[in-house]
Length: 281
Image (cartoon, rainbow, N blue to C red; front, side, top):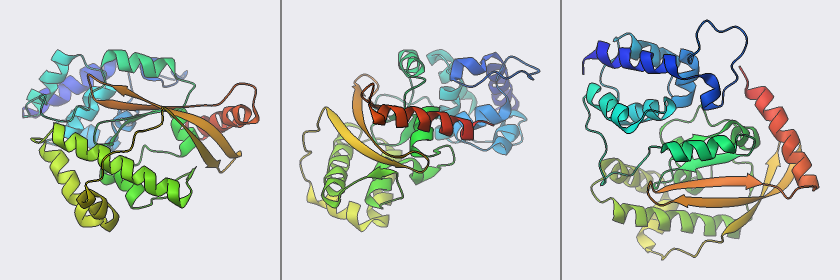
């Protein structure tokens, strides 16, 4: 990698992205129209110190995952995304790799739902994007790293969650997730990162290993699932969770809504106000 070229490209593209374009408040004390380093770092899920070293050419060989996260946060067009991969010494992912990019149309869809909790996963159920209302509802996801970002791992290892599941519901949910991951593995047999994820899950979770070996056919998902969330500030609220599939990019977009005029809608509105205030810098 030509370190100064990679860092220069990231700085240049960071300077052209307005905070409003990525759903951040512009504020009144900004010396530039672009993103601050800490803002881009937060959007990409990396530390500000690491981003600083990348931009200054003091950190070399960023992983393909870091490059993709920066390309997504900067909302790069396909040609620019490919250039960023080449500057980092990587080939841009091809059709045999699980897609993690967000097409401009998907970005626009998420932007138009800026007051609605939305989370986007790739085909391996690894978190790609969670908007501020989602974090306000479910808890902050910006500090998640590695396996923490994978919904299969979080479920089979029973990580703390605000979603209330009865034991039977939780078990069925795990079966569906693992079965869907198996289908993903069959579609992307050459994806080494996906194979490593499965190997790590098998080694680290007896529950996953059991389900993976069982080869259970996937259950037909309900088009809409009702979820009860135990929010620490507003109490329990029951919401509709609709998961949309983006076929071309193999993404899963989950959207949480409440029926207008209900107590759940009022509690959701309050949770979003309280949560986005606490998440603001």
